[in-house]
Image (tube, rainbow, N blue to C red; front, side, top):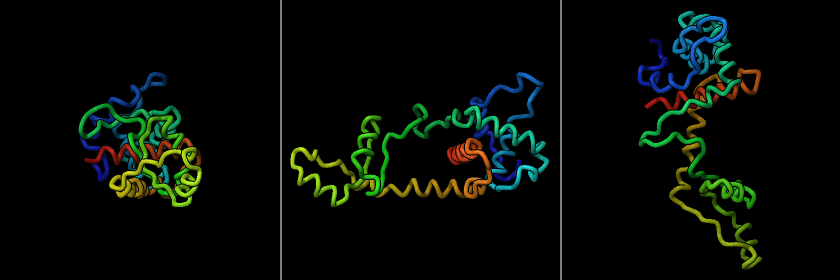
Length: 191
């Protein structure tokens, strides 16, 4: 097992979400070997042709990654939550800076039942006060939650530790989306 390859525990979480091996055209190479090759490429950013031979043919690894990016396999992988429960597909709460404090953004989040912590800029507060009752009620704000908003920025920085994500070597948008999703799955798998 190479540095960065999936452990048994990580593989046991991912394996049930992958497609069944080779329906048409014969058997596929082992998913675990190919997946480790994809993760190696994402972590190091090497060109596909320069993948180490222990992962099999570079073309096989690239084609599997491209296919899984196109058919949504990466997006179907669900990692269990640490405290149990169903895996989430949307956030329960978001935090944002003052730049995102518009009525339109707040309305969008309310329609989708997503709680939010976004401070209201002073000019919007003054405008709301000038309008009186027609200006609406003050936006809810939790200062303790707001202090934790940098967790998202730190997570994005952790994603950018994957060289293929930081430099965007992929030409096609759907393949890059698959690369980012695979890097996120890798982060979620780590204890």
